[in-house]
Length: 380
Ligand SMILES: Cc1cc2nc3c(=O)[nH]c(=O)nc-3n(C[C@H](O)[C@H](O)[C@H](O)COP(=O)(O)O)c2cc1C
Image (tube, rainbow, N blue to C red; front, side, top):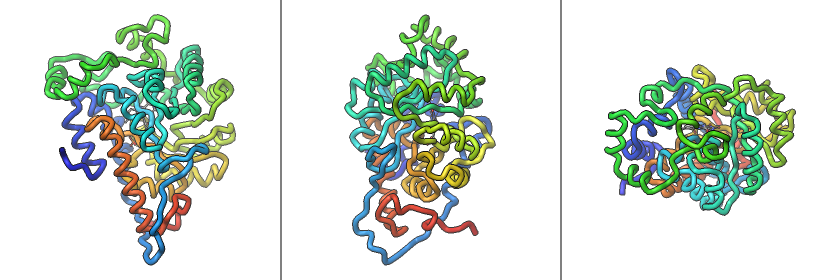
């Protein structure tokens, strides 16, 4: 068994075990990938204050997100096609999150359907949606989620259209994936992954196929989804979701103070400061750079979470210190999933929690609520 001590170890293992087309899908940003890289490097550039002679004998990483107790302020972000990193990926990741005690957010573009995830887990998952043109479908999807006991809807607003991701274009990643000789050969070189895929019936977008009139196959799905992203949606449509969803609502994909204030004033339960992991507007600021400005603008009107670039417990500490009360991780758990399935996601969470509680000790904190600007070195 390879020794895994960091999220980077999981990434390296996932690169070996997942066919190139799907590994690249996860490990890529849009255009030049500058924002993708900046998310991580801006986090790394922040220096923490080392404090000594503080009693840190008893520490807790527990926190609350939307009033629920969580083992640490980290949720698994919604990620499309997670079931292509590993067979039955969404079910495995949801189980790992449940066992660890952190929230799992299911993407609308998941391979396993929400019914399937609900049938294989006990803890309620949270559901993510995009505002697609077919509002009848979105309404019925919200109804399905509600019927399954899903308490939280996450509406992603930073994808009115899809950013250009060059690796996907080169690899022929589309729905259905282009089965070129090169891709087939590459898949054959990953026998463990192939065996998993042969052993499951879950290969298409489970939340959509069979739930939209006329969409029963990969081909009809491709035709339908190409027309579905809605570049015309506005805050009025966000209000429509608010009015049609009786549970808690989170708006994901905010990167600007003015937008954050609009969302907060609409009475949403949380916002996620996010640039979609650098997959949308290349050239946008990193999320950790925008977080303090947004936190200052919004104050305590709503919960503020952050994602994009978090690769360690130190990064979680930095996000919490600069104004977030929760974080989301995308690629770290996908790497864990691709590397070792459910055990890999579990390992990813263990690594982040261990780094988090050690970093708390070195910065003189025993509780997540103590993480504040005080523990960050001013810029020199
Ligand atoms: C492969 C992949 C697929 C994604 N799919 C979705 C999605 O379906 N819905 C969504 O709201 N965000 C999606 N995201 C964005 C994540 O929810 C999250 O914002 C991002 O991954 C955070 O950055 P990180 O990967 O650096 O942690 C996706 C991200 C990745 C890497």
